[in-house]
Amino acid sequence: QVQLVESGGGLVQAGGSLRLSCAASGRAFSRYTMGWFRQAPGKEREFVAAISWSGRTTYYADSVKGRFTISRDNGKNTVYLHMDSLKPEDTAVYYCARPDKAGFISDYKSPREYDYWGQGTQVTVSS
Image (cartoon, rainbow, N blue to C red):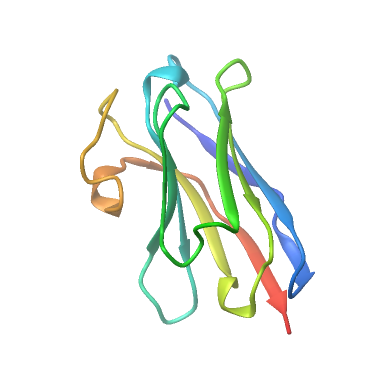
């Protein structure tokens, strides 16, 4: 059974920083792409960032490119999202996710590619 547990959310002023963590249970964490998504009230869940199984390749939504950094520590079964220069429009519940398929996934931006989700962590950015 795969479980994903996010932490690190909170309230921060615009321009501030936060680091989210996602701890994964289950075997062979290092075989899977991992993704971060977010959902603001009244909006659809949207892609934020993804990282390949090895950590060598990362992908970002245009809205966060240059401000957010995704990374992973396969020895700790954990994926991180470091967020700098936060804006009020970054306010959302942030979720980490893992697909059932190991290795490369082509449509890493689509929530449909991911089978396991955490419970989410709230990030609120005040202006």
